[in-house]
Amino acid sequence: MNTPITKIIPLTLLFLASLLCAAGAGAEVLRLSEVPSHTLCCDAEYFIEGGAPLSLTEAMERQRAGGFKQELKGAPNFGIGSKPVWLHLAFDNDTHAEAERYFVGGVTWLDRMDVYLVRADGSQSAVHTGDELPDAPGLTPAMGYALLLQFSAGRNDLYLRVASTDPMAIPVELMTRQQFEQRHLQLGYFYGFFFGFLAALSAYNFLLVVGTRERSYLYYSLALSSILFCNFAYTGHGVAWLWPEHPGFQKFVILVSMVVYNVLGLMFAARFLALKKHSPRTLRGIRWIGTLAVVIMALALMVDSQFVAAMVAFVCTTAFTIGMFLLGILSVLRNQTSGRYFLFATFFGMLGVGVTALAVWGKIPFRPYTFHAAEFGLVIEATLLALGLSNWMRENRDALYEAEQVARLDALTHLNNRRAFMELALPYASTAGRHERPMSLVMMDIDHFKSINDQYGHQTGDLVLTAVADLLKNFSRTSDIVARWGGEEFILLLPETGLKQAINHAERLRQAIAEFRIPVGETSISLTASFGIAAHVANLSFDKMIEQADVQLYEAKRSGRNKVCCSSAV
Image (cartoon, rainbow, N blue to C red):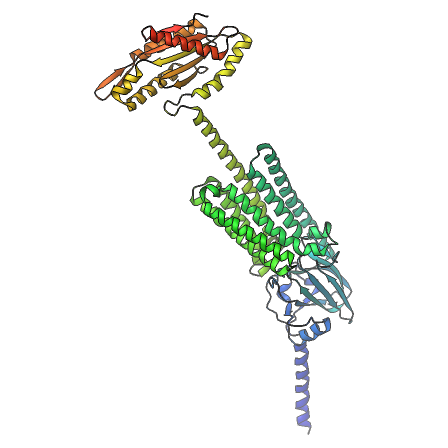
């Protein structure tokens, strides 16, 4: 009889030991003194509620029965509209005395988070928080929810129940007071720079709108302001500082600001990349998509559907991030200089968002610098877009200047046209009148030009006009203003030049033209020109000077051509 009993007792003890092990199956106990300074979700178990909400006691029983899974990596993310989730972590307070630690968990937009600590002595503590509660306990902007917990000596079990319609990301950290204060200070400095940078850039571009009336600066300023507000809202600064008593407002403000940012960003991109000119079909598509997003978001607000609003916001943001990058590629393929800035900017923005998403999904280590990579990318994106916008404006200004110059030049001879001549000459005339300085005006006409056109054709006539224009430019001083007055007539303004000097200058021109030969096939054409001169005198307006020079030109042509005649009024 002794033999069977001696065999049964060890087997029974082994069975009881296996039951005790099963009770804690999957719950790796972390030493409190050795808790790593990063997310603990790799060591957590989780359970997704499938029916009625569980109480803490029911959740503990399910965990001890092995109902929790341990398959988490990085920071658990259960997506939009997920069912409530329980997390469990076990700690061994090996300090042999009560110890306090800051629990930092979740993200600031979680609707509801219940935190339970079951201590070794059997006592429990519970904190209920989340942005659906006014003045949510422990809400810490940019960090999540920070709660100071007291751990008794021995084993302590931490249970979290999280419920949220928005994306349910649940990073979990345990920090000493010193670690928490250091992290909080670092994030304060970072977001001080981040918000200050975006606010200053937005204000600067708004001032440029006031000064230049250029809509691109307005769209960029509005886009930056919307980014600033959106980030201010989703990091928890808004609900912590501005609307802590309005959870209903917090429920939708992040989602609405995301859509507003996307729409304003597309408006800026359309203007910056000149889609109306280069790709009107793409512009129409962007307008339709933006309008549709705004309409659906408005309907979601009307029916109070946070789930629909969240889906619209995150679908729009994903499409916006990828779409902006594709617009950059298309602009580069069209050889737009501004497109290179846009492509690089949107690449860094997309890279930052991608790193943050991968960290939250657990594909890469979840660290503060990976979680906040989106902000780093956004700063680089905003900087590059500002540089691109400056370059775009400089190109437009240069193009406008070139267009104005072309509009002021005669297309054939590249001399000033009549409009440009008047704009350039009037200040000289005004100066000569006020200070009684000498000034002369010369009008010139190519003799028998119609015969040249009739005999040799208009192409040869154009060659004659071009050759004469080049000769006038070569014989003119830097201060002289030379223009094609119309047809075969040219006009010259000679500042600081008296009548005698003007006559000498006209004679040199007349002789040079008379000696000039223009080859046409196997022969050449000789030219002559007639000149009329008027000099400035007191009380003689500039228009009267032109009339007098024209009269003298007519006199030179009437008296035989190839002559220089001057006004007798001088």
